[in-house]
Length: 294
Image (tube, rainbow, N blue to C red):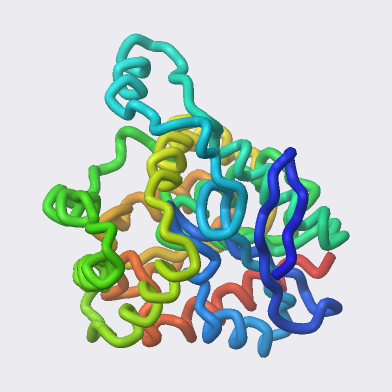
């Protein structure tokens, strides 16, 4: 697969569809590889006249790993905030946003439609106010502004989802399938699909250390809400009513802050992409992209 040389690192990416179609950059969430955007999603988007680009964020998948940076001390990061200091982290979400722009540069794409999920949605927001000239439209799925006034994630789900994971292959896959079932919302859980995804993920690149550094990156810039009024790109905010990580209030917070943003709340959707919600999401991306004919 191709690699982009970006910010003195390499970013692994894949494309689907006709390069002359509308470019759409998909940004994955915390610890997720480009596999999080399934072949089914990408093919359906390509069928709707998008040239789909997905990539591994730094420190995950087949992109550059920051091995020498070590494991951040999350307690110290939180303590630094308490002291009113900016914590020291290996890299920031702003660095990751610049990586995404570097992928577009590698493909000679001046402007693109940008879509991010969860942490990827935070990166997408940063792109939209940090690199506004590169953004044709913006789609933010199950994401947040990092606003500390938002209600917290459901603690029981957080405790189960972020508990230590076995490193042995089969035990890891079994555990992650179990955790996937916790965030699926009200829709029937497709265990076979989850198992296939988690197996591909493990076999492609098992690297839990990167997740901790990505989590630390979310500390800076932290609350991005104050910057969102600068965003002028047509924006659709898509959120599940049953999201246990970023509660639905997080989606509403984004939509009421970005000028003229639209909000689509999908009833019963959790923090995942069950097949039942894909038609709504794809239609929303198509309609939003058509608001900018540049």
